[in-house]
Image (cartoon, rainbow, N blue to C red):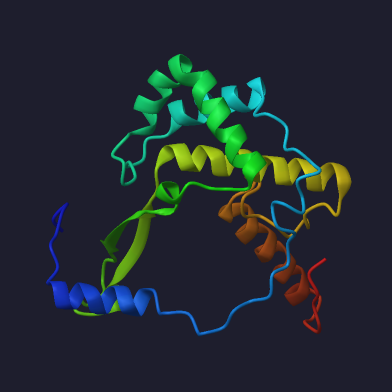
Length: 194
């Protein structure tokens, strides 16, 4: 299989339409207070510990860059020289409740699945590459949410494996296998996950 492959534009349009169907014309109700309503509480500044964690994560990443073309390791090299500016930018994003539009834009890559017909949309796995700077801000938000839930509750369910430190897909599969084996060994019947 070639490393890079070109698809005919019409076929590419069909694959993308199949993989990402348009949402229905439904406007969900607003569930959160607007930024103006919540202005009484200011998000704390991005901390030294958070900046160190961002740097550690950037140094370890070996993934392809997003639309801006900046590799994580390049950002890791320049971050110590731009730390004040980056911290101010992230803090301003948190306090304003805004996430830069540029960081919401990704580069779509279609990875061909082995053993599937090349003329089928199901033969392609979509991967969207995002800018590392945006992923770092997402990590700050996610880690703060997890800390808040652990401290204030309700904590995340023990059945939650995604986006949790120290848990993986393999852990979820192992847990499911052990629970289902217990049910089968016990003669079947109804089973409810914790």
